Image 1: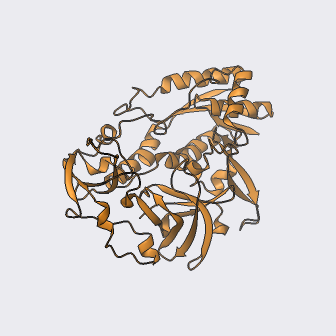
Image 2: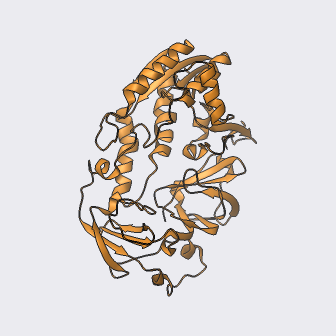
Image 3: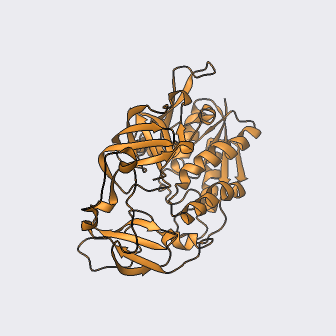
Length: 390
């Protein structure tokens, strides 16, 4: 099979390429650059030139062709512009998930196919399986968690479609990270001891306020602290709408304890960057109001404002990996759910209504954040996902 490997200059994609060559496939290395602007990045040019040089060395070691492709215009339009728009709305996006859906397994995939590839392989810790019969009479593709629970990256792939999965390969999904490094070292790959990349996909580690100020202006606003007693008299019924609704705050809900430089620079659960000390416990952002430019905070990781039982995903944002598994209005199911990468799976009941999907957890969850993705699993299979609206 002719396979294009997204060679990033890291050990995971390098071993993915190594395994495919050993399996006898016709492998081509494809390195993509998706970002040029260094504004707000903490490491200058993000090291992409070094990554490209290392990726070329890996390709040379494996005796496979190497190609370079610049997808920066597409990345800006489909990922970065979306990211700015979400922060401007007071939401916290997950650009890595968008990058996989819109770039790696769309634009990049089409580029690879144009070069003659039949499939694209990446170094993701995830697996692809088959299940049942799809509507068109073919077996459906399933997205499965990687064997290494500490590195499982299925969450980042939660928006992929059947068409995308049909062209995707994850050669290291059955391996654990130590085994990946061992294979790289045994093969003499230059990435064997390279540290894992961190930060924003293809951009690197960033100073978020500085990065966002490319399009979002700084503006002084109030920091208001909410006392735990605020919640004592609040009416909270057992309806889905109530269980899945966030708390609402106003300027008179608490007391002003400081100022900030822009509510859209902060996210729920954040504790750094507030500039307020002298507390027994850390202050955490529990809500933001970008229209009034107010940040609401609470003291302590167990502040009631950080804890919620449920969330809602708008109907248009509900995505099923296998469309035939989609829930119908009025239906309810039990799944294991996560609302952020590396979070342990949480037991929850999903309720499908005409206006969306309501997820009610068995136990209150900390830091439910609009704009992030909720993903639900049945065993190892990632069944579906959606953008958290409330």
